[in-house]
Length: 416
Ligand code: ZN
Ligand code: ZN
Image 1 (cartoon, rainbow, N blue to C red):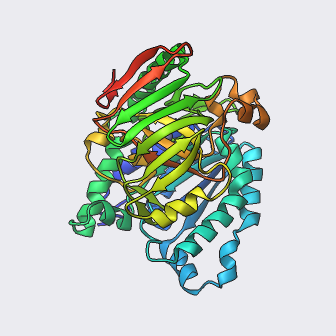
Image 2 (cartoon, rainbow, N blue to C red):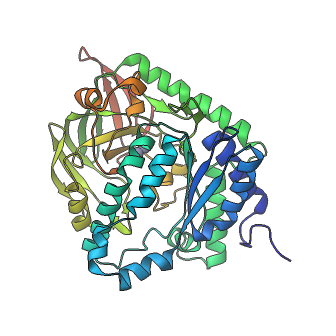
Image 3 (cartoon, protein in one colour):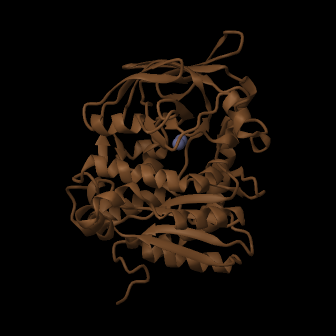
């Protein structure tokens, strides 16, 4: 018997619902809109389901670009040394042009998170930097929320084996597939209605936070005593939100966070990570950093310290924060108890902060602000945006009002 998904351990009905969620909730694709789609080669069954739902929704042209783990490894094994300072700039220029023409962006993640863990860290970081620089014009349109975009996940075999190392490959894929379907609400009979309800709940949280206009948040917990100043005119976001092209989309599937822009020059104190960070094939564990005037001045990690150091030295903004996000410990992804080694999932298991680029949409009237105004209000600029987890069931958060008053926001990892 042939299986519609081509991967026997993945439920084809749920895979189809995930594709429907990506098009109808994630992108809210409009008739006539083109779609630029990237995916690991293992995710081809999902790419095909997405193309079908996209065209049924009236898509213009769906253009997929696939990456492949063996092709990537071949580069590290045989590629000329000088090539690691290059990137396919022509492709990224085309992508930026497509975004300028209102093309929607869909990314499927699902690669082996440890793919590059045995490769030369210097080469990994050079390639990543060259890529980041080439991608910058396109990334600015994503970070600036010019167009509707969405990231979803597919349970690739090597990723599944990373999350469930003790299971046979087939079992591991099935378990990761179930976890992805549950977190993405594709396991529900009417996932579209489930997402509408979830979006309404997240919007209620952002309304509460925005009504308080906190000047800063004070995080306390084991290894953490951190004051995160919030940018002037910051706005809390969460769930579906409207891109500058007027389309209301859910950029991340799943999403459990509400988030805003910290002030790049008003963060002080110490903070310890509560989950390992999987960054381009390296696991960085037990991160502990100290901020002064918004800048990381001390950083240690029990594992992956060398990669962390290189990340922090990427550019001027890579030692400063571009995002602060609140996620209760009771979130479904947190309760799954799984470490996904993937930011899309792990960031929705705990409160987190991100080094690097801020989201200009997290400002009141963000769409009308110039880059100079955003910088003046405290928005950070960088080639990187890396989320890492600082939340747990032991973290307390107070909101500090502009006149110095304190409002409990989180107690023991839950909304106060
Ligand atoms: Zn986040
Ligand atoms: Zn982030």
